[in-house]
Amino acid sequence: MTAQLKLDAKASAAGGQPLTQKGESLWKDALRRLIRNRAAVIGGIMILILYFFAIFAGVLAPYSYEKQTLTDQNKVPQWLINVFPTMKPYAQVSENYLMGADYVGRDLFSRIVYGARVSLTVALIGPFISLLIGVTYGSISGFFGGRVDNIMMRLVDVLYAFPSLLFIILLMAFFRSTFSKPDPGTFSYALSQADARLGGMLFIFIGIGLTAWETMARLTRGQVLSVREKEFIEAARTIGATNWRIMFRHILPNIVGPLVVAETLAIPGYISTEAFLSFIGLGVNPPTPSWGAMISDGAQVVRTYPNQTLFPALALAITMFAFNFLGDGLRDALDPRLRGTQ
Image (tube, rainbow, N blue to C red; front, top):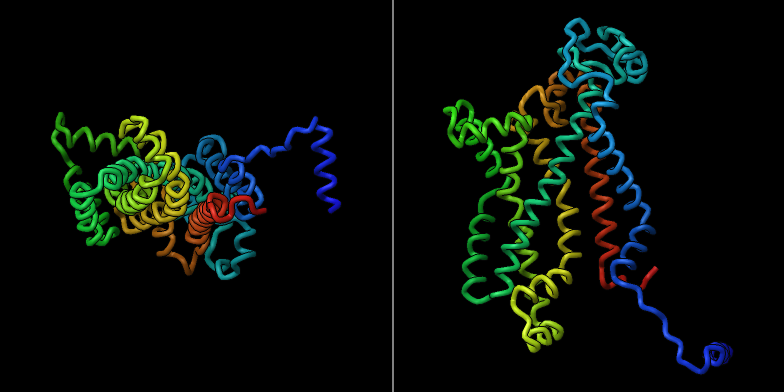
């Protein structure tokens, strides 16, 4: 009763006009809940720090990633010997390297910093290719339906039948053997030169891009099928809106949330795929640093010099955890069932 009297008093103060509360948009509500998610905020901050290190690696790294000092092979600072006492009988101490040097005298810290460029570039290019191909393919399939949908989805089913990781390995082996010594002036030569300038990442992007879009295409198709029969879509058809206008102005804006969440959660998979390819020797070209290649090199001396495996593995794990935290936070923030909750 008291609450009703207060509402009546406010209404009278407003000149007898009914009081209305301005609604909050979905994106503002999602941003508010995302900020309240501590794990997502921590993940986002970690990702920003990682990108800062990757962008300014030339300034932050004390040495070049390819600089070799053969007289400093496997040298470590004193604090590492204190942490790993088993290194003491054979380790040579040098305070010139924060995390030690590798088997050819290259600074581990500098290579880890530069290696962030590879993993974080994959974290950008992989989702971009997946969204570009998958959303386009799935939207066409789901919107037009019928025979078009049936044919397009059967193609996706065929691609799904082949293991993605094995398919990428075969693609990388094919690229590395076919484009190793191409004839100058040919298209193969141009691709080989572009791959060399990118440190061997071009073929990784192609390999991931050819397999990453299938899941996104299926998800997009399902979202389009669920939205295209809504009342506002029928209203748009009634007033004469074209198929392209309905797709870009009404359907895609209403399904972009789940697509972004799904792709954010898929980023750790892209990073781990690149690390695995580099680990088995089908990734970046030496001496371009990759955390996977560094783990592979360090695994050969893990008993004597564990720092050469531990630090790149920690960098890889932290990056994947950060994207997982952010993806989980985005999923909770954009969940329509949680809209309006604190």
